[in-house]
Length: 95
Image (cartoon, rainbow, N blue to C red; front, side, top):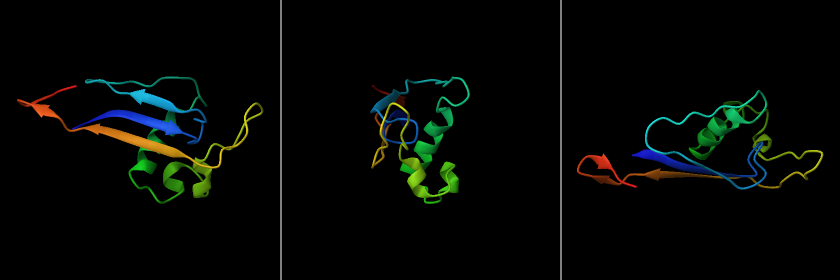
Protein backbone atom coordinates (compact mmCIF):
# COMPACT_ATOMS: atom_id res chain seq x y z
CA UNK A 1 0.00 0.00 0.00
CA UNK A 2 1.27 3.46 -0.78
CA UNK A 3 0.09 7.07 -0.70
CA UNK A 4 -1.02 7.82 -4.24
CA UNK A 5 -2.29 11.38 -3.87
CA UNK A 6 -3.52 14.03 -1.48
CA UNK A 7 -6.30 16.45 -2.40
CA UNK A 8 -6.76 19.66 -0.40
CA UNK A 9 -9.43 22.34 -0.72
CA UNK A 10 -9.82 25.12 1.81
CA UNK A 11 -7.31 23.56 4.20
CA UNK A 12 -4.98 26.11 5.83
CA UNK A 13 -2.90 27.69 3.02
CA UNK A 14 -4.69 25.81 0.19
CA UNK A 15 -7.84 27.78 -0.74
CA UNK A 16 -7.88 26.39 -4.29
CA UNK A 17 -8.33 22.68 -4.91
CA UNK A 18 -4.79 21.30 -4.91
CA UNK A 19 -3.82 17.75 -5.86
CA UNK A 20 -0.42 16.37 -4.88
CA UNK A 21 0.46 13.14 -6.68
CA UNK A 22 3.08 10.84 -5.21
CA UNK A 23 4.87 8.47 -7.57
CA UNK A 24 6.71 5.33 -6.51
CA UNK A 25 9.97 6.06 -4.75
CA UNK A 26 10.81 9.21 -2.87
CA UNK A 27 8.90 12.48 -3.05
CA UNK A 28 10.43 15.66 -1.69
CA UNK A 29 8.52 18.85 -1.00
CA UNK A 30 10.64 22.00 -0.90
CA UNK A 31 9.89 25.70 -0.66
CA UNK A 32 10.66 28.84 1.30
CA UNK A 33 9.54 29.45 4.86
CA UNK A 34 5.82 30.15 5.00
CA UNK A 35 4.96 28.39 1.74
CA UNK A 36 2.77 25.70 3.36
CA UNK A 37 5.07 22.66 3.48
CA UNK A 38 4.09 21.81 7.07
CA UNK A 39 0.42 22.20 6.17
CA UNK A 40 0.74 19.12 3.97
CA UNK A 41 1.73 16.91 6.91
CA UNK A 42 -0.99 18.62 9.00
CA UNK A 43 -3.53 17.70 6.31
CA UNK A 44 -2.46 14.05 6.41
CA UNK A 45 -2.77 13.96 10.21
CA UNK A 46 -6.17 15.67 10.04
CA UNK A 47 -7.66 13.37 7.40
CA UNK A 48 -6.44 10.35 9.38
CA UNK A 49 -8.47 11.54 12.37
CA UNK A 50 -6.39 13.95 14.44
CA UNK A 51 -8.83 15.57 16.89
CA UNK A 52 -6.42 17.83 18.74
CA UNK A 53 -5.99 21.33 17.32
CA UNK A 54 -2.44 21.31 18.69
CA UNK A 55 -1.78 18.15 16.65
CA UNK A 56 -2.33 20.19 13.48
CA UNK A 57 -0.55 23.30 14.80
CA UNK A 58 -3.62 25.33 15.70
CA UNK A 59 -5.25 26.74 18.80
CA UNK A 60 -8.75 25.62 17.80
CA UNK A 61 -9.90 23.16 15.16
CA UNK A 62 -11.39 25.97 13.03
CA UNK A 63 -7.80 27.03 12.35
CA UNK A 64 -7.55 24.33 9.66
CA UNK A 65 -9.96 26.32 7.45
CA UNK A 66 -8.35 28.89 5.11
CA UNK A 67 -8.65 32.19 7.01
CA UNK A 68 -8.45 34.52 4.03
CA UNK A 69 -5.86 36.88 2.58
CA UNK A 70 -5.71 40.39 1.18
CA UNK A 71 -6.85 39.12 -2.22
CA UNK A 72 -9.09 36.23 -1.14
CA UNK A 73 -12.06 35.79 1.21
CA UNK A 74 -11.95 33.27 4.01
CA UNK A 75 -13.41 29.84 3.32
CA UNK A 76 -16.17 28.25 5.40
CA UNK A 77 -15.11 24.62 5.00
CA UNK A 78 -11.99 22.54 4.54
CA UNK A 79 -11.72 19.22 2.73
CA UNK A 80 -8.84 16.76 2.51
CA UNK A 81 -8.89 13.45 0.62
CA UNK A 82 -6.19 10.83 1.01
CA UNK A 83 -5.97 8.34 -1.85
CA UNK A 84 -4.15 5.10 -1.11
CA UNK A 85 -3.25 2.36 -3.60
CA UNK A 86 -3.40 -1.18 -2.34
CA UNK A 87 -3.08 -2.86 -5.74
CA UNK A 88 -0.41 -5.52 -5.98
CA UNK A 89 0.61 -7.80 -8.82
CA UNK A 90 3.14 -10.53 -8.14
CA UNK A 91 4.56 -8.62 -5.19
CA UNK A 92 4.87 -5.31 -7.06
CA UNK A 93 2.64 -2.26 -6.93
CA UNK A 94 0.77 -1.52 -10.12
CA UNK A 95 -0.42 1.90 -11.38
